[in-house]
Amino acid sequence: MPRAIWSGAISFGMVTIPVSLFPSTQSKDLSFHLLHKKDNARIKNHRFCSAEDEEVPSDEIVKGYEVSKGEYIIVEDEDFEKLPVPSKHTIEISAFVEAEDIEPVYYEQAYYLEPEEIGVKSYRLLLRALEKRRLVAIGKIALRQREHLCAIRPGEGALLCETLYWADEVRESPKVPQATVSERELDMAYSLIDLLQTDFQPKKYKNEYREALLDMIDAKQKGHKIETEPEVREPKVIDLMEALKASIDAASKGRSSEPRASDAKKPSKTRRKAS
Image (cartoon, rainbow, N blue to C red; front, side, top):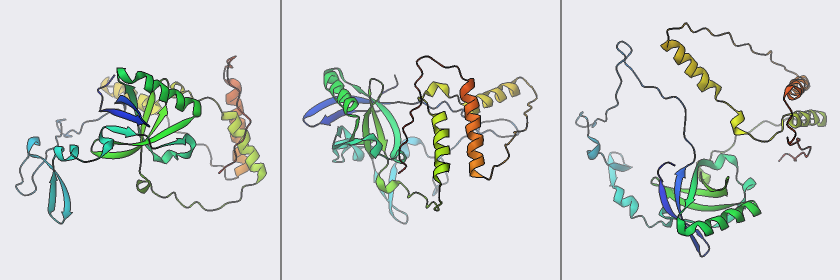
């Protein structure tokens, strides 16, 4: 388990649950260094003072907020800690909402919440209550010198704390032109959705880009010539009904070729009304 990045408590009415916050994900993207092309020497980034044109050591660098052109207010780490904000150490639950009420665009980053030993029972109580009622708890947390709106939701045996963007941080959605959709086209779309509907299985999906990139790096290391087949693009189908029919045919063939597990969940035929 990685090191906790925040320790405090969840305030649930008069109930206090001591918890620690841990990252829930880790990036496995490949990282690259910048090199000088002629000798492969590493390129290093240095921080220079714009007035003295010399490199500044890290212990001489401070944070400043620009209040007017060229005028800054220096803010020390101690100043952040002295802010009179309860969310620095407590996630006070202010509301419970249905998960569907939160638009996906508001979600920012997910973390695991782990209880301290004295708070295990209260933690389990909140976890079970959220699971049973299918609700999400809303609160605020001050993290990395920012206050975030957050949603506490049940995960697989543990509580997740997901930071949310504030309303004024979310841009307006684009204005999509109106178009008339026929019932027949909707029925075709429903048929395609039913064919592709299944349980979400994250392990089923592979990062093909990363695997191809690693294969390419391995080939270059071994001095192999890299040959790639030209990408074949399907001809663009202009007619919507023809595109739907072709998609349904392809999905049907794919579904029939998959092995059927005896306990596989059949796709639901329930069609939710589009909002």
